[in-house]
Amino acid sequence: MPIGVLLLIVVGVLIFFGFVQRILDRLYLTDKAAILFIVAMIAGSFINIPISPRVTINVGGGIIPIILAGYVLSRAGTIKEWVRAIVSTLITGAAIYFVATYLFFNAGHTTRDIVDPQYVFAIIGGIIAYIAGRSRRSAFIAGVLGFLIYNLITLFRITFGGISGSVNIGGAGIFDTMVISGLIAVAIAEVIGETRERLGGGPIKGEDRPEGLKNTEYAGFLGKEPEERRKRFQVKKGGKKDE
Image 1 (cartoon, rainbow, N blue to C red):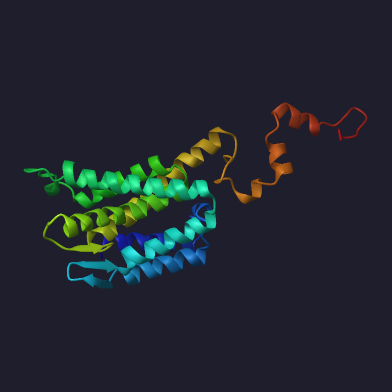
Image 2: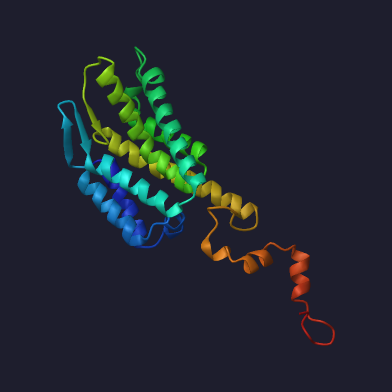
């Protein structure tokens, strides 16, 4: 079984038992929507649609991720988030292409005998996606779609550069790499985001702030200094609470 499919099954089980609800909330995904996308990606990973004699697109690794990214962005809705996600996706795709073309496949390179290059690309892609995207949504989108950008760059070179070969957009090893990269990117964003929130005394402000803490009165009260909060609930000597 391909590792990408296996990881998606594991994620589906975690979603079913509610272990990743916080991450889904950050991505504006419900349990049902997330599982639906996972099932569609797994089923679609076995379907390739021919576009030309040398170009095919994989349903699970090419079409569904684009739909998923569009869905997540449409729920975010801010121009800042759209721009950040698009820019981070382009940066991730360009970085993966640079590593694959100029660093990893130089003549005489033998790293393939030690570790599959696709896993190296997945790790690099996930890390770069977080650095470029920063938020959970942008990091996830960049981690997933960055590899499709890499495919498109390769397609451009084959089409206009006179290079022989074929491209399966989102298929073959790219599917596994894309899944791993997306999971790594969102995992890094979640760990760092959670750490920042704990060090800051609560969920951070901004578009990643949970809806429940966007109530201005409640959030304002939480933001008061500890001494001020203590005084607000301090019982006066006469037995009455400070109003």
